[in-house]
Structure formats: C-alpha cells, structure tokens
Length: 150
Image (cartoon, rainbow, N blue to C red; front, side, top):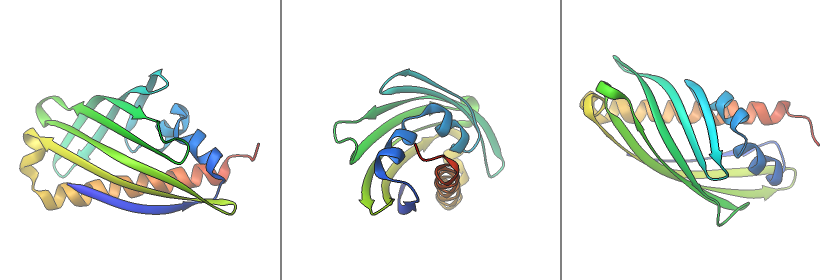
C-alpha cells in the first residue's frame, strides 16, 4: 500500500522540522497514540490504539529516523505488532520546502500489513490509512498554527 500527499503548514521550515522531531507534538498528532518515547535522536518507541473496521488493536512499535537530508528531507521506517490483530511495517520519505512564511510538506509512504488486519481487504485498509494520515497532518497543522513564534 502506498500513500502520498502534500500539505501547506503555516510556519517556517525550521519550526516545522523542529516540531516533527518533538515527541510531545507528535504524540498529540498521531491518532490513537498513547505513548511516544524518544530513546535517541533517531529512535522512538510508540504505543498506539487503532480501530480498523471491526478490528481494534493496540500496537507497540519502533520508529527509526534517517535525518541525513535534514532539514530539507528525512525518512523514517517503523514496524509495529498488534498481537492477534496482526503486524505492520513501513516507511515514509518527507520533504520540506520553504515557501515564504509557510512550508510545503510532502510525503510518500509505503506500508505492509499481516495477520487479521490483512484479511480486512485492501480497500478498507487503504481508506483507513488515508484517513489516519489526513488526521495526523490536520492535527499537526493545527498545532503549528497555535504554537507561538519564537
């Protein structure tokens, strides 16, 4: 499954990049995120509860960031286990482009799922993934609008 989109964030690129690396902000924005622990500058651990169709699962997983292109681009890879519900793994490439006082955030993401979740059908999984991504970026944009300019 692949997803790609772009969103305009009402903040300069350096603030957007800093916020994307702030576990508190990310936890607020990730749908169903109960806990986000930063183990190092490029390793995070997350606990997320999601309902996909009839399946509700608590996932725990690890995310690794590759910031070699920062602050213009970075990528992340992760894998999570939802117990009996199944497992997921994937990654995303994110680019940030300054546009005056705003930032254009583009992402391309890929994910693979297995277990009970994979039996739900690709249409349901794809539409749920799109909704979750849209919800994350809308929340992120809202948080950036509320953040005071330093």
